[in-house]
Length: 468
Image 1 (cartoon, helix red, strand yellow):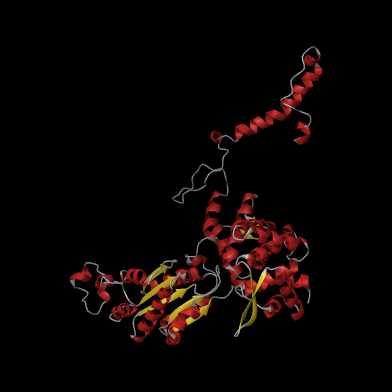
Image 2: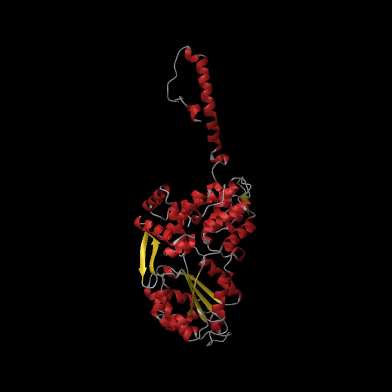
């Protein structure tokens, strides 16, 4: 197009006289027309009346709009349900792996009557586990009260709302045929008007009979009130001492588990604490397989291998990459996801993560990549992802299969670059973390972006690149 337009100036006055009316002018008008007419046709094609603007393919009621021309519109709708990176999994058909984790939680609740504390990094699948646990407990006729904590969560509001979910007919002091029970009253109707205390709530729950209750406090780490955490610890002890039929499940307390326990050391024996582990390669492949089944898509075996390598055991990353890769394949008119589609998905993922990291840090990381330090960055980010963000030289050594000297050298380089901060404790010794939480994932995505080679070859690993 630029060569056709070269020398053409639509603002230049036409010459007058015989020459202007001659063959040269005719040729100029012809060239002008050859350039402009396609542009005019494109402009008309892009008008809203012609349907040129992008449209939603489905309505707010999740029905096909019928106005789009995308032959893969139905597959896209299924794809949105199959891979949900921005939402927890609530459909058992899409819940991948975690069988042993779920079995362990259920046994702790059912056989040992313990309260459960789940912790682990963001995106590891704790909330999805809570939703599937809720379904399993509901099937067993447990009363399940699910609450997502916030910064301002307090004991009175949280547990008064929980009491409102427990029917009064299960209180031993009331007959199922009592007027209050028949009118649908709940335990909340027996609570005093003054602020609720752990002891009062425990006393009330001790009178329950004929049912069991699970109170799930998800994202417990978001609660900023130390008083709230202390009250939760107190109610755990009270319910355990009174043999209450109410059990708590706390999720998302990686930073708060120690603080919770140290308030009342005696509750240690009443708690089962479980760190939710990274997914295995087989479990990540199950995410891919579930999506293939639900969305009528197929992943090329090499594309599936790329997803496993990029995800590093994170169900969030696996779902995000599969989601983008599936749409990339459909955009190309294919129902088979190729390695190049995964590479394109990594590009999209990087754009999403860049918004979570400060621009100076991003620029610093890119400079190190351009300077040939990508192996150092990849090795340390891999260790950080494997160790929930806090790692030492042995983690770098183990996750990359390199020598102890090379692992320590990699750490020292990034400490000198001020991308790693040094952490020290008497129990754990010298450990490290990246200066911003999202950096390991962003660095790993950037490494994948530069090493997937557009899907033309198997992705190298940092350990292969770095040697031993």
